[in-house]
Length: 497
Ligand code: SAM
Ligand code: SF4
Image 1: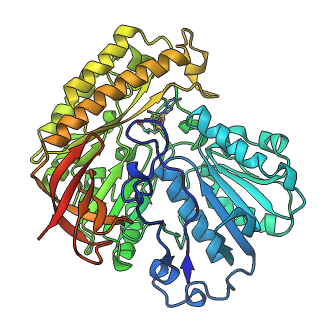
Image 2: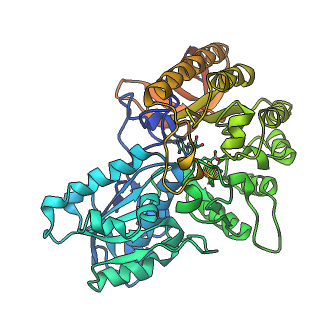
Image 3: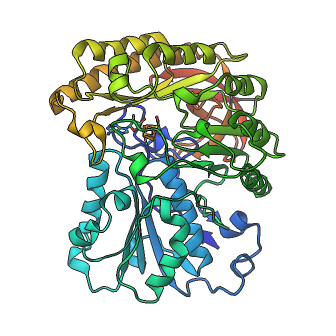
């Protein structure tokens, strides 16, 4: 059986604005005219020969069809993969369009205002179409944030469920199937993690795996602690069991996910540290690459750097969001480190046994950010020389402490600062990438261009590279590529043997 992934909305791209498929690890590059998303056979995902063997006693489609659209980050993408797996195992079939589906789900993001607005405009499309018998559900951060108010704004919605309640989804689905019109899952007071028997994966080679849910930090601008609930780590033996299954199913790259992935605290008696977990995952036969994101600077410890230096399968890339280069702004953001402490972490990473690429997130225009403080962020870019950056205009969010802070910065000024910041980073990236011309990298090939003999993939350091090869089939393989040219956003090269 072929299952087609539903639509996805990606992380902001390296310029921090429009979502781009280019910016996400292992995701196909649609914008350069690369091939469409993959169909992954259910047999490949479950290791079983057929749907009936994968889900004994369940008829495919007996409960109808579903369409699931995802907004936001990789964690949302992966939550959707698990929700889709759950639906398949209950006898739903996946539809390619909302028109063809009886159950339509939106997995939502509320990190910035624009992301949340997008969901309501999507829901608005159903205003005129009530009575078509479709069940509509809102999952994720907007569901958690808006709660039952969603029923007021869009009375045609039947399911509102935040990510901290996903483990109760089977019961909620049963209520919907029994004809219940309004079902909610909005409790965030939980110590459960969301685990499914089957995960409907969207990528044939790189598998996401959430190891820690929620967030216990309290950054003053951020909705995540409210929308995703408190930090809950998944048991290390359960993680390793899934990694072994993934390797048996042919996955060679795993990406460990968490809002603060390196705050991982194994709930079992083993008390496996995050760095030990990285090494244990790398040790699983068949795994060639281990990635992890997002790391919080305060919990970034020397043993993680040591593990990357020692084990080549742990990718030489750390995403370490700084948010601002000014200690005063960092304090107002409640980021728990100063500029100097952050720079000490960078020095520690730079002292590793092998070079490690470093990327970051930055917010401009936080309330009260002075011109001189913004300039400190610019000078931090000069000092650190990031390999890539996601950058955002500060967006005031409900329930956050920064909402009531005075001295808001105008949208125009935020836009000006963002443009200056992005210009600077573009220059840095152009210079850094130019220095790579002539070097050789191992690339996991993840896309094929419509242009003949053109392919795309990622290096271990998460650099995207478009390259030429005369081979007829390379997708999913690891090849050596020599860099022949560079742009600020990527590399071009040729396949070498
Ligand atoms: N947990 C990660 C961390 O601590 O860096 C980040 C998770 S958040 C989903 C991704 C990024 O969105 C953040 O690093 C921050 O730069 C940005 N972000 C979060 N809240 C924001 C807000 N209110 N306005 C603008 N950007 C925001
Ligand atoms: Fe949000 Fe801060 Fe938690 Fe990251 S660490 S998810 S920015 S509260």
